[in-house]
Image (cartoon, rainbow over all chains, first blue to last red):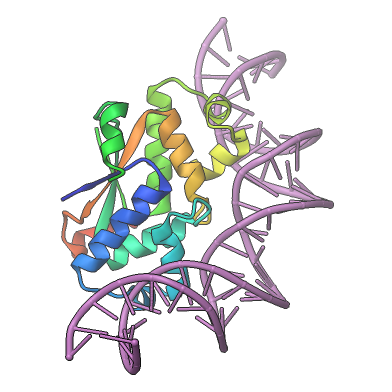
Length: 83
Length: 83
DNA sequence: GCGAGATATTCGCGGTCGCGTATATTGACT
DNA sequence: AGTCAATATACGCGACCGCGAATATCTCGC
């Protein structure tokens, strides 16, 4: 299932979901992407000042990619994504 | 056309494309997202230490959204993206 | 309810962000 | 060529990154 993200929190949640799917631990993912477990934790928590490099490294380590596209759903529907 | 991004540079290029499509200037976009023109410039250039907040603000200002999904193409093909 | 693994959080450090402000440099158009 | 808008780059500043290393807290299965 693809993940739509409009906030850093949603990005973090998506990363976490895919990581667990692949049965990785934060420490394990951290090793793959040359970052610390603490850094992965902050990324998944949606820290808004996380650096782009960290995100892209995580995506690469999980074999994911990003798609940028015009917003599809209404603002109302987007609220559901929070749950 | 949706934009696939695996590097900060590709993200920046995507942002730039959508910004121009909407006939925005860097300064104009900056005002919408409460950032300076110089910051938008660095984002579009693909500075890897750009903060996630900046990216999401830009996407929101351009009415775009992010999708996280498994990589579609082969790893071999991904190498070409570097050039 | 224990214990072990996973995750969250802290300290000091060097680095770089984005900010305000200001100035190059580039690009498009006449 | 000349002009002006658009973009790129620079300086000092305060803030916060990710780092190493370590610790605290949470979450399971048993």
